[in-house]
Amino acid sequence: HLDLRSDAERVDVAFADPEEAMNFTEPMMADLYRSSDLYVQTSVAEGWGLPPCDAAACGTPVAVPRHSAFSALWTDDEVTFLPIVGPVFLPGAGSTPRWLPEPLGAAQVIADAFRDRQGTAARADKARDKALGWTWPVVVDDFERALVAAVARRKAKSELVVENALGGECI
Image 1 (cartoon, helix red, strand yellow):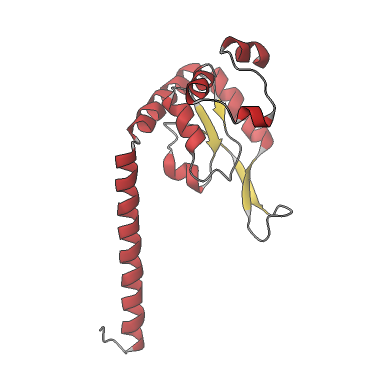
Image 2 (image 1 turned 180 degrees about the vertical axis):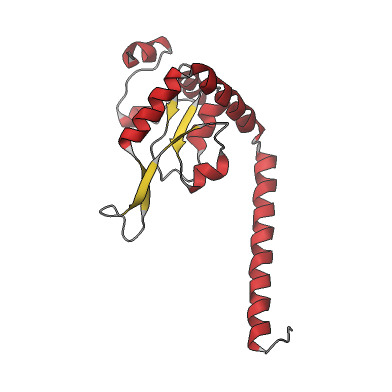
């Protein structure tokens, strides 16, 4: 049984309307993360993955959908992955498919994370170490390497197109 109201009061966080929630300070958010048993993100539209990274940096175990962005950032040894279903086409989302957490499977995975406290804590330790290693210089260097690699792939593909168009000669 979880008593969210008493947990929120314990860390001096009031249940606020959405506009008041925007005034949470970083120390308030860190206290909230640290007081949590598990951070669960069901959104598949948070491409940068900052909230789970913030929770992990505070040592809070993390559960996220297993989709491309989170699968690229985290491993099974670091977070609990929620099963997803898809592609699903949502009203108002145009022709962009979405992969969404599968509710019953996600509930089971979350319950398992609470049952296996030792495994969950071990994943949280690994996730915290990774999150704390993502400093701005590291992230910028990784981003620059990704851009250089993308430009090189694009250039190689363009040269191949020119070579094929000229019958084997590359200019």
